[in-house]
Image (cartoon, rainbow, N blue to C red; front, side, top):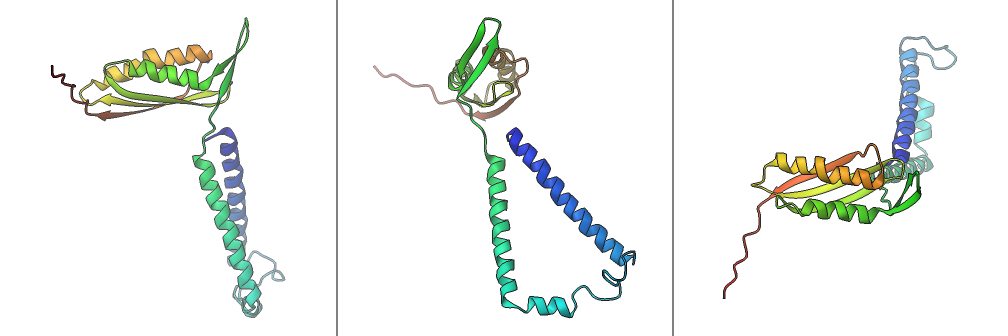
Length: 192
């Protein structure tokens, strides 16, 4: 989830919360008879003759269906945005000697290769996300099920992540590592 998505979620939730707060306050005020009688007398039902007459018109139901379709499309779009990840192609790394353009795929492939070089790891892959100022790493590691998980985690913490942090010149590098266990492939037999 990107920063733009988080900001959109906060604004959307704030607006929905504000709308529900206003509607709830109006309902509570009507129930407690705190509203002026000219607005909505508390003893009249909410669904009265004018409301029933309005909903008996066929065009009202067309508007309700159109609003439901628009709402459904907005909800599907919101769900798709939640799952979207911004992949980054290059990072600009500033140092006293100048600015260096670093290929995100190169850093990710190097980290994956470094992890896969361990006999404990059967397969590894990495992705970089975020931007040059706030890079993020997603690692997927498949380790031998007989391997001590502590050693796999230690390899992540002491080798792969520090090397990526150095390459990106990032003081903090948020990392999500998914480690799964699998049986090691049987050794290959060579028949002479």
